[in-house]
Image 1 (cartoon, one colour):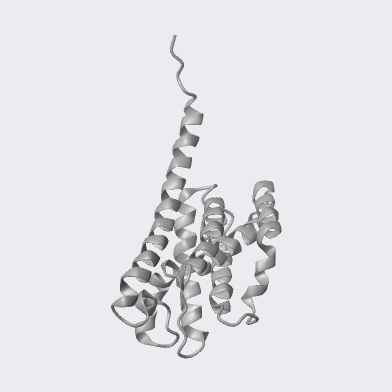
Image 2 (cartoon, one colour; image 1 turned 45 degrees about the vertical axis):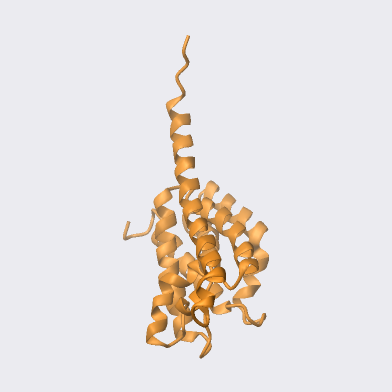
Length: 202
């Protein structure tokens, strides 16, 4: 006697597999670039891959809008970002996987341009925290815009887990890109408004 798996269970398993693959590829790119930077590129030229970060108000620094989230200032910085990126990124794609890519793109553009416009002169901004704060902003504001029980529950859970880091959107800690945190959060909020099913454009 054979048993066929429930189609709904199969669909859930397949979606979970896709989510893990997407997050795994992002994390692998973070770690692969940092390992390469530490052991190869920093020996080739000054600053290594970090020179591809966001350089405020420098034309060349605009490339960092797309490169900076994948670069980190050492393994401690990378480890600190990896877990919240994976958890918050997974929560973003729980409803629809494509939301993850939309939120990521909007956050990179809004957050990156914001940093480029107001970041301190001669500074370099790197790190996935700009995306982490984008996901945080999206999850927090999605509950406000949608006003349904699942979205509000996730917003409350995320605030309980990560509400304390919201202080870092203020210039209180030297060496921390508060601009990236602030504009990443704003980018996530904009994405929550854009992806709200009740928005006029949808």
